[in-house]
Structure formats: C-alpha cells, structure tokens
Length: 167
Image (cartoon, rainbow, N blue to C red; front, side, top):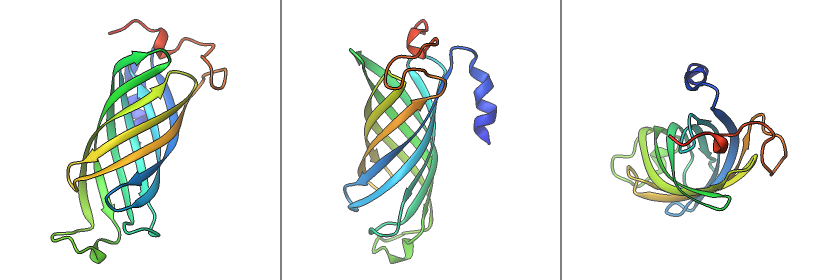
C-alpha cells in the first residue's frame, strides 16, 4: 500500500524493478527466500521494500517485512557496488524453541551490508548483510527485472536511470 503513495513522488527519471532472492544465514545455517521492489529516484539511491521468509525446515522459521536503502558508491564497467541499510519487522514463528534468553515472537530488525549488481534490464545481485539485533550475517543472491526495460539482459530501449544526470 505504501508503494502506491511513493511512486508518484519521484517524477520521470524514476525506474522501478521487481525481483526475488535466495538467502543463507550463516549462524543459524538456515535458507530462505525474499521478494523486493526497487524504486530508483536517481542514479545512486534506491528505496527497497522487502519481504523475506525462512521456512520451518531449518532451525529458524521467521518472516521479515521492511524497507532497505541502497546507495551506489562505486561503478566499474557494468557493475555497481552499493551499501545497504535495512530496518523492519521480524515475526519469529518458532521463537519458543530457541535457547536464547529473551527470545520473543515480535522483533525489530536492523541490518547493514554491501552488494554488487549490474546495470542491465535483468540485474543479478549479491548482498552480504549483518543483522545488528541478532548478531548474524547472511548472503542474498537474486535477480531484479527493471519494469518497462526492453532487451532482456541488455540495455533498455527507453531512457534508463543510468542515462540520467548525476545528482
């Protein structure tokens, strides 16, 4: 619902991407998946609403719902490197099974990390994040598709965020 209100705020130079990822948490040895929408108000910044889920076949069963900010700080050839910060809500479904003192079902989440992606229509990405609340790291590998982009893995036929003047 919040996306509907955010979209008109950024004007013509905006691009929107949708995608998904696979995740692996190194501390809990758990695997999961996620969905995201990237909203690009300019060349360097992205707002990224995310939903993630770790199913119950591992140690942890939880849902995450939050918002990340990506800041592209370095570009080399067709690759963008970015810093990411994420805050959100964590519903830890099987919290009662945890030996951790103070475990509870409803939690906040705060993560920081680094990622790399391409600047094509189909953008594979990889992110390494650290969760400051639970002191865990996880790796995300995924694919983002830029809506309205023509050319599959190549460049768009329309004006892209990478063609816009730098802010």
